[in-house]
Image 1 (cartoon, rainbow, N blue to C red):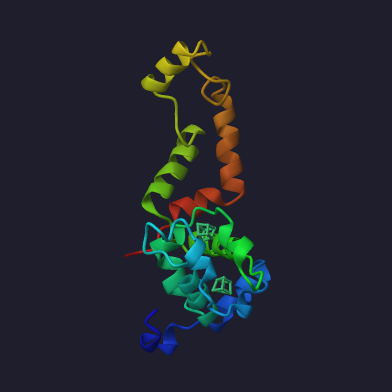
Image 2: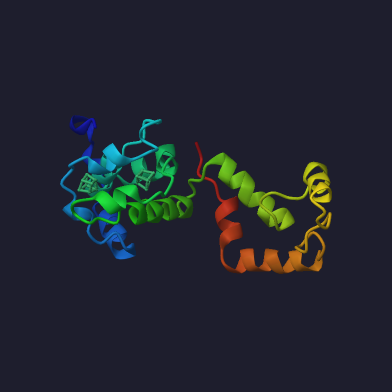
Length: 176
Ligand code: SF4
Ligand code: SF4
């Protein structure tokens, strides 16, 4: 981690308080031992480093953490959470940060696309000719008993997404 390059104006001291309040209650006790990074299956194949993420979070580098696509490389396998000598709920902390990222308007384009499909069709993966054909081969009903066969229910799905604020989240995008 490039600790010499941290600009103080990039530090939000309330970020770690918000993480603690949301459930990452022991995150401040991180000793930077690196156990989480060493056991992380995602880190073996990508540049994602759990230890670095925890450090940046504790330092209050909110924008850097929330805007980073690395935040989405965690597979939520829980291995780091089981191994952390400080019993920090690392995976929960990552999920909390992801929720915050989406609330701030940061969402990966494929996630936004999938969420929009859900809003438009009631399915993240809507029925198409290929999977309809496959259902037929498997001797299943060609159209599943979902909004595809109950189109009226789609209005209800849309209402739920509107009332819960999900629609607003997926429509709001940060610039740049
Ligand atoms: S394993 Fe726990 S204490 Fe060690 S670096 Fe990761 S979060 Fe910090
Ligand atoms: S929960 Fe995420 S960060 Fe932790 S070991 Fe698994 S993939 Fe890595």
